[in-house]
Image: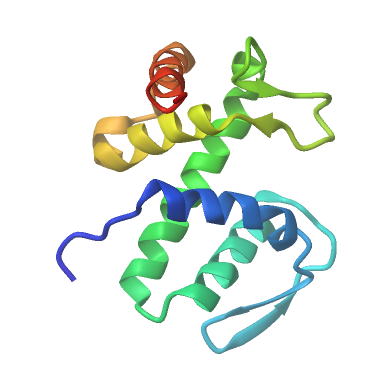
Amino acid sequence: MDKIDYPFIEFLDHVRAMRQVRKYNHVRLGDKFIELGNDECLEHNIARIMDYMGQLYDNEEERLFKGKLLTLMLMYLAENIHDFDTADYAVCASDDAAALVSEHLLRAVHHFFTTKSLQELGHGPSPDEVKELAHKFKEDYAG
């Protein structure tokens, strides 16, 4: 497989599925079944995401690529959610509750993470860069 495409609409479907995926208490990774319980530590959430991707994609390279990108984008959003809790980018009620994230913010994060190599991204774009692009996407897709 040469280059793997990860369209925004596919990413959006995956983000929407996370509400259910986070509830997985048992996952299958390869030929192993693992009991996770309700623990939501990073390692367990990555296992949940990879199990979910395994249900969607038979191709291992595609499954790993999209699972890695999805995980990185979700981690980036979680790490920077308080920077995005302004205007209409996101609403974060508390650190214990899931945030509501606008589609234009998701579109901007997706753009940064799918148009640059991981090496180019480093720790990811600055929240201000993402908000600027999100604002542009909001205007572009408003009509």
